[in-house]
Length: 94
Image 1 (cartoon, rainbow, N blue to C red):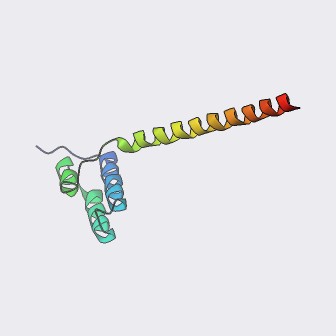
Image 2: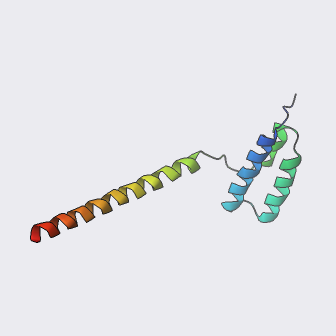
Image 3: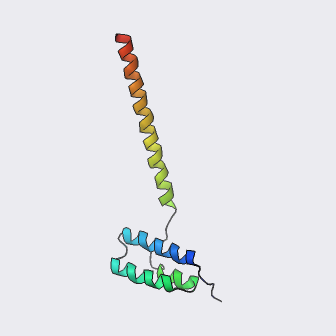
């Protein structure tokens, strides 16, 4: 018995196809063709077949944003520290 696919299932599959196309694994023609099939898929098995030859995705995309944000905060703190140190040195010399 096949399980029916929801609209969210179809949208997730198309989003995965977009990421794979962005990574260069699919041409624009392949993406368009697979997206069309995904939008008309009725079961989860049909959706799985659309991405079956592509590597499994990890949740690394969301995690990759955090180190960038942490690095930005680190640089902001370092810059503020250097500014305060400069002000302190200027006050001592005056």
